[in-house]
Amino acid sequence: MAAALPAAPSRLAQRGRAIALALIVPVLLLLFWDAMVRWTGTRLVPSPYGVAIMMWDFAFGGIYDDAYSASLPIHFWKSVQRVYGGFLCAAVLGIPLGLLIGRIPLLRALLDPTLSLLRPIPVTAWLPLSMIFFGLGPRSAVFLVFLGAFYPILLNTVFGVKSVDVRLFEAAEMLGCSGPQLFRAVVLPAALPSIFNGLRLGASFAWILIVVGEMTGVPEGLGAVIMDGRTLSRTDLVITGMIIIGITGFLSDRILLALSNYFLRWSPQHHA
Image 1: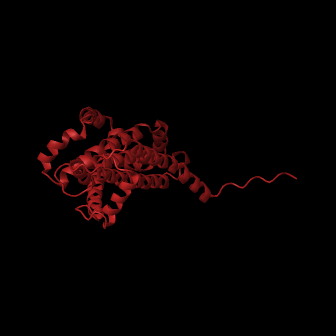
Image 2: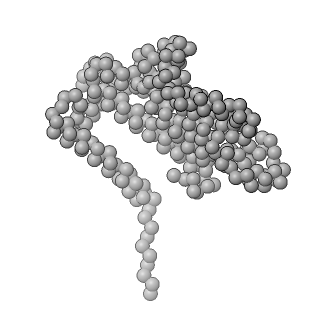
Image 3: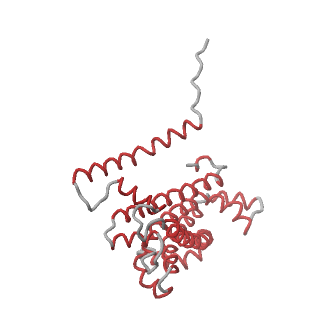
């Protein structure tokens, strides 16, 4: 009698194994961080336990009772509005423009040199001009976030359109597809993997640049908290803001990844 094949691991077991593997490096980094603080005896960098206390007070209060106690919901909500306001503006402009540039050679010849000239300029260099254009406040922050997210979305969309196999266009035209129908049936589905890559990169840059954006005179937001922590030499406050931004950016990326897997369910090789 043939031996029975071992049962395939359940989906829950696979998920548990993936989570366990993902936690190994963060746990090792925390242990290394704690060991280095203890070994050097520094007071400039808090221990993981000190940062955990700061995070609890920042979220719920009751420990330090200062200006930052229990203020996380306010700062978090302000930053979320600015990040996703700029990111959505970048997506609404970048995706259609990328589709057009990738598909229309004349438009590409008109816009590509200018975009290639503007793209290398650091977003931080736009900080003074943003304050002149939009004044001190949240609109400058949204503009800077928009700039940071716009180019990854645009370039990945253009790349996706230019990477479409020419034979797909020929086959679609033989079947009578043209104009807007060709975009819906061929261009957009074929470019979706690159578009989602651009969205994921754009969302990451949006969270990276919120600290720069909130240097424009806004009193509330995670970036403003980090800058206050630097000014006050509150390293625990700086690291707390960094951790919250990192966690939120990670969750944003997971949401975009889930959307990518859903819309690309017809293409298993593009699942992540």
